[in-house]
Length: 201
View (tube, rainbow, N blue to C red):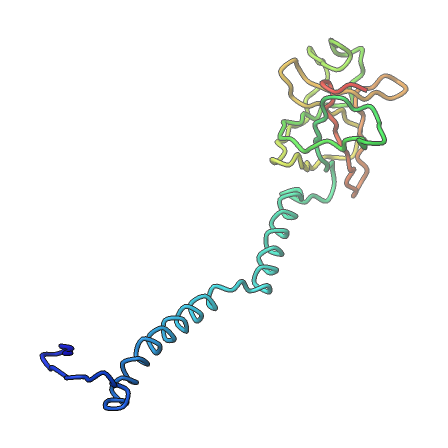
């Protein structure tokens, strides 16, 4: 029997292991060596794709820091009003299975007027106000999360948010002043302005 490789013919009898043990052993070991080398390379490549837990934790921390930064007012103030505009809608009835919604921050324009009484506006549905006769002091845009801050002189003010139906405000004091907020010297008054005309209680 003849095997041809690289133009060489080797005659092998029926007992090849006795006549050419070294050559046959090399031929048998060569595929095993190639297979081992391939497996070792695959293992090495896969080891480089392992996830580094420390790096993932660092990325999560950076993302959380960015999220926390976005939730803070963009322009810190020393005196005035700072707070958040929240949107509530749907059924807000308390239930053991569904705790009350805290609302979500929304982007709005907040209008700051001199302290305004209900007698100085035209009111629709109890919460939408037009024809305001008091002076507009300033207005401020919230960020995407509803945060805002505005510097103001000491005094009393009324807050409104811009809605399609008019300027919205749903809080009144005992004298029927609309959403009254007081600013004191050297202080920042915190407010949580809730827009809830599409909520049911």
